Image 1 (cartoon, rainbow, N blue to C red):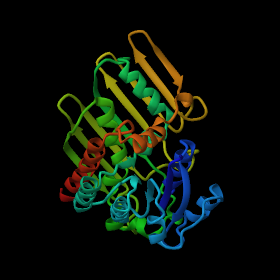
Image 2: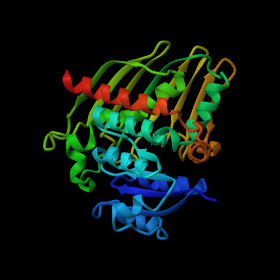
Image 3: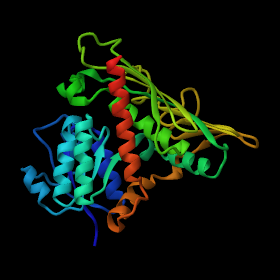
Image 4: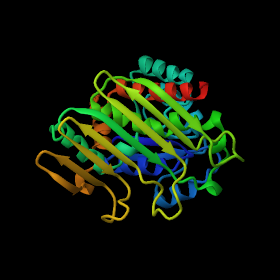
Length: 333
């Protein structure tokens, strides 16, 4: 029997990839519920005309689905997550999975009480094939022991199309809790670190004085027992770039390095998912487009077998804890 899912909240475009990739993994989406008519709704209906809309949240929660896909306004995701778990569903949320330590504690309590899975779709790793190939190379020892990552997450603002909540700090959660959670996830994953310490964090609004609650720049440094990392995120992608951002990750090992040019290779090869590998024997650019996106099939497996092949629950909790801690540190300075 196929697994089923419902989508709860369509306020961020990431719900498109969440829905599409779970369907590719064999999960049947039986319907969606969203509050009002968010700007993402027409795009969702166009992509998935066969998925019906639930008129009431209670109907979506009570359908009996195995999985809830949550991409509501960031500040509302935790409450929907808890409700879904209390109605017997595992949950995949868009990042950030929550916007405060209080919300994170509520989710932890629901996981402990219900035994449900809470998985955050860190799409900059889980929805890029080049990240899959990098994981394979790191695991195979291609660059020795990983000692540092540098993660860059530039984004296009698209200001005229953004909803009101995007510019309200208490609704979107802050730039480090939001975007930088991607890079924190990658740091822990590629360095093999269970946890880390935030050593520096900073946020600013340099280019949008008319929206003072928007943080358009953020950076942080972190350190584990055996590796360090630097992260920079921003809303400054120039108009001439052909996509939303030139996201990159450099993974430094004791015997070489890997660079991921995930979405574009300016002045280089066309397309996406470019990987550069340099070690003692190889110095080359690799087309990683065919490496696959195993997270979604693994999550379906975990739902069926109560395993942790997609991502451990401890890792998911730790990423959001560190992101929230970095956000708190930046705003206190």
